[in-house]
Length: 124
Image (cartoon, rainbow, N blue to C red; front, side, top):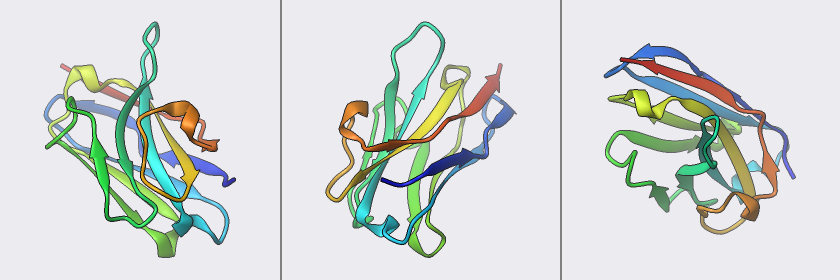
């Protein structure tokens, strides 16, 4: 397992951008696939984006495709989620999650470690 800490959330107007960071502890970070999930009160947690341990395979939810970009910097033990053209419906708490090896998956329970989340609020 790794310890994950998200940052970069905040308040932004619709059409704006934010970059979320997921910083991980440990020297084996490059072995982990990372997923970003989001959740709003009263709704189920949903998958947003994922990146394989190799960094080659990326996966996006249809709702964020072409607006969000996931990337990683293994030297910094960090995964980023660049969010552009934000919409009010993107408002949520965003969580990163890690699973050892392989591709990112869309299912929260398939991951081994989870962060505490960072709030993103998009005003109209």
